[in-house]
Length: 376
Image (cartoon, rainbow, N blue to C red; front, side, top):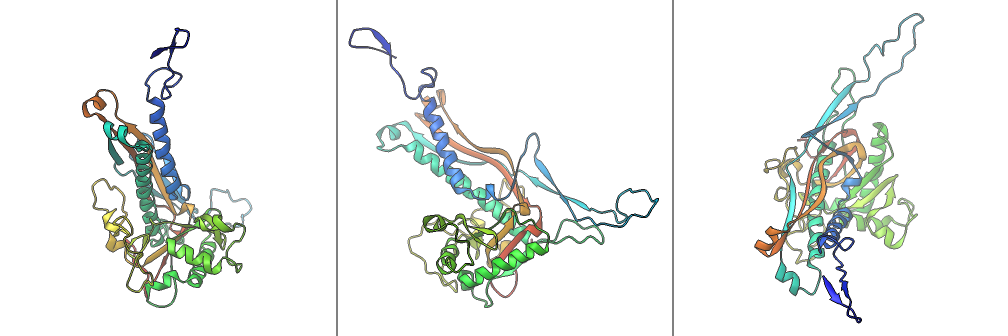
């Protein structure tokens, strides 16, 4: 576009949305939107950095190889060395399939965008990122939960490898045991010892708790030496892995299976009173979000009945589960004739992933009640 300057000479008007003053006048705005979506996703998807993540190309599934322990033996002079006489180490595989395309989308009417006094695209982008991150974490954490209840995939005779671990929090049958700081501290030390005994690397160990558990923990034990005190104040309260118990970094999340729901449970014997007006998105039942009978699900994430109502936290090392991504977080926006016809844009965030347990020995499930939840 051209306009006249003070001397009457025609000059080119700079359009802020163009890249190098050429092409689509909204090109940079769309990229800004993409950035907001990625930011929303990255700030909310914690499981992506805590577990093994592989990128899949030109296939529907990815194979994870699991190798068991081997032994040592004394050499007999003159005897050829052709591997251990017991045939160690045993090897097993775990195949993770990509689920169908996961999407979150919204239609943005041009007139609404014109009349709005705030940036609609930026706001919508963040919410799309949140939605994808929420589902990502829920699938990944259900995979870890499943692994904690499984035996090792190694089934070679005389080579029984360690499987998953389930640790009871407290000693009563009340759900309120899940919120008692001393119970949680004991459970973390038990989990650390169990992983040590099973030969799990100490690198990359993390725990994920319900938000109220996390805040109870840092209030009660943050100053007595049981919890790492290198970080204080707002850093410690952020829930981003600053606090440690027994070398296990602690995160908080509303996306772990927790007493039959996601992230929280009110009433009954939980000892937690609802703050009221929590909305339908807080603490949904497990099957309201993911069930292995849902269309598009190609891995076994379990039903609500299978996951159960007594799980109350996860402790794991990164080898506990794997996430396969065929399509990483992406943004697509309609334009051109389609936008003209509908006088608006469809804004779409998409992701293709699958998750499942890999090494059960690296997964620990915390539970309350008289008996541990069953495997599925």
